[in-house]
Image 1 (spheres, rainbow, N blue to C red):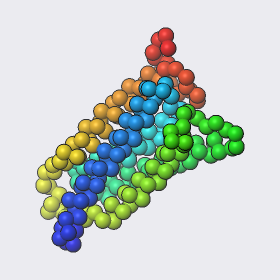
Image 2: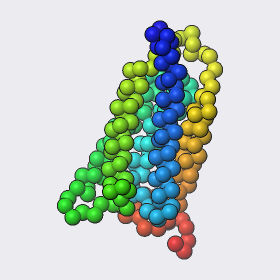
Image 3: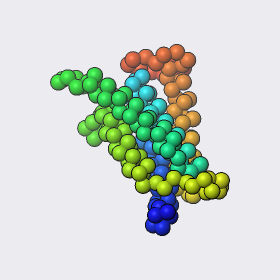
Image 4: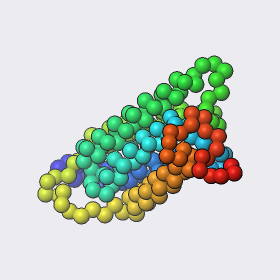
Length: 190
């Protein structure tokens, strides 16, 4: 009741859409960095991208079908899995003198940025879950309109998923990805 009084439901819808745009932006940035700098993702990097994708799926479900605890659960558990994957990679390269994997961005490698991003996403999603007035049974059947921000997030997210799928297929083929990829497996002459 109080959520309706202060318009928190509308704000949490907007914040879910904004988070989805943010996750899409992270994935787009990583992909564009890969293309521009020919900095191919390693298997742990790909796991982190999968975790960002799963966080995005939870957010997209909230945007398209309304907020549900299960949707937040998908996103929060995926953020935790992403934290584990990125922390593992940070720990692999923590020794003094280790140059790390890939090119750094603003002084930190992408896996370090990913660890920070997953932690912040888990906090953000936990706060949203507490603020969000879950739909009442009588309101569950009302069709939703995600709005322009929600549409931007959903379409941007779906396009980057398709692009990343094709890029990963070109890099790894149908088998396991190399530990230290230098070229795309399915692009001849590279």
